[in-house]
Amino acid sequence: MLIGLVGKPSVGKSTFFKAATLAEVEIASYPFTTIKANHGVGYVKVECIDKEFNTQCNPSHGFCIEHHRFVPVELMDVAGLVPGASEGKGLGNQFLDDLSRADAFIHVVDISGTTDEKGELLPEEEMRNPAEDVKFLEDELNKWFYNLLLKVWRTFSRKAEMEKAKFSEAVAKQFSGLKVKEEHVKNVLRNLNLSEKPSEWTETQLMKFAEGLRNESKPMIIAANKVDLPNGKENYEKLKKDFPELKIVACSADSELALREAARPKQGLSPASSTNSQSKANLIKYVPGEKDFEIVGKVNEKQKQALEKIKKNVLDVFVEGTGVQSVLNNTVFDLLKYIAIFPAGANKLGDSKGNILPDCFLLPAGSTALDFAFFLHTDFGKNFIKAINAKTKMVLGKDYKLKHRDALEIITR
Ligand SMILES: Nc1nc2c(ncn2[C@@H]2O[C@H](COP(=O)(O)OP(=O)(O)OP(=O)(O)O)[C@@H](O)[C@H]2O)c(=O)[nH]1
Ligand SMILES: [Mg+2]
Image (cartoon, rainbow, N blue to C red):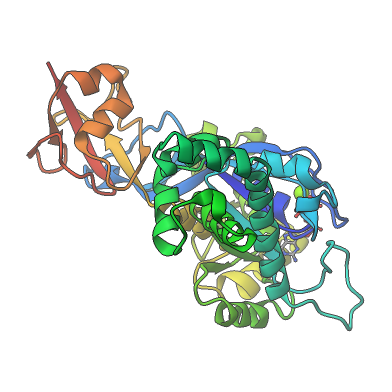
């Protein structure tokens, strides 16, 4: 699973990325700070099941703080996108290619309205309506898909008709590089009333089809960033009214970055490499996504004021704290509909080295016990006999539909 951060220049994509991954990336107030895409690992937050077993887990990937398990997901931060990018404006097509592999997008919007469509700071008396950014970005992404479709459509549609191949299968195959799946095509066709002969579709119809495919294969959530600035809250409330169909989360990537850096373990150890990070915390104790923190280290007056400002202007104001964690969780669990599954012995939670519940995997909702066995190892799938629910000790058949936070042992021949 790969999540891409998109948006016009200077909205805070790299700040969001750095807050989520703690990777060293460049952040600056001028447009096109990022040129080459950044790849890194962020985390979704899951209530760890170790608490139910009265124990403390030892994750082999990610980390666990106070029974909040942080499970890795791949993130990508790209160059800013300007109107006309699909025609090559700004950094144009080259970086659109970077986005092909993404399964979902986080659209970072400057909700303070202080930057123009190119990411340049506006004069103080002017304000941009963030709704414009939501519209133009969707538009560019849709046009990007449309142009890719248009390039091959004549040949492709005729060939598909002649070979009487299953149309949705053929489209998925042709655009697999964009992560288009057969299911996506079927969903789009169901919603649009298009003729049976794709070669006869009008330009408008093909555009509608492209839009649908973009929407299905790259669903999008909005991170209404810079909500800490004046007008942030007001613009955020307005944007939600303008786009009731979109998931929009109030966000202050800058605040999250400050908190995570203040909570960062000493000696530059990232939480990922420490299972008990809060005991080594530098200045504050902060669990990402929570609405509070505790000062535990020696902070100077300036740091204290900065932290108090974050508490007063962001954490106390917005239900989802700084929003960064909420955006990631929403993307994975609501938009992409994944669930978290723990492999666990029915009688033993540790692996051969004694690590308790070392793994937690993200699987698509609807996955079965057998899917999970195959996910772990082909041999587990092939030799599947049954699964055991480690929490209830109940025996589960191959068709058992997994639930979020299930813990399973797979029994094989
Ligand atoms: N007030 C405030 N400023 C922010 C926030 N997030 C980012 N910024 C600032 O916005 C500016 C741009 O941030 P970047 O993260 O470099 O933006 P970007 O979207 O990656 O920009 P490009 O790489 O140029 O496309 C920097 O000065 C950040 O410090 C936020 O939540 N609040
Ligand atoms: Mg950047």
